[in-house]
Image (cartoon, rainbow, N blue to C red):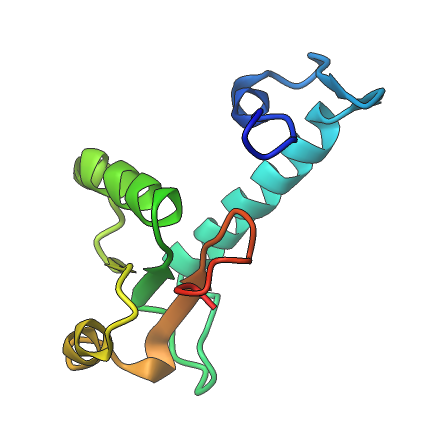
Length: 129
């Protein structure tokens, strides 16, 4: 990614185990697959009701907080794959720093059964922080 002075590695997500993709002399594929496996395990635990909120109740809602691609990408995938969605968990997306959007959402969810995800590529975006 020339505008950020670092490689765009989204292609690594589609590479099979055993492929090689070197960045600065280091093969990144093993780490990519390790993280993908961790994500799969986490999603499975949420769907099975094993990942619990602070009151030990199963997660019923996931809120993604992000802006730009950290908002649009997850929302797009969620909408495109809605036919395959797990029926016990609802997904919500926040991109606005205006408190009214959060207030409206907070009327539909329960904090004790909601997982909040702060999504940012750089973690320098004021709106996300």
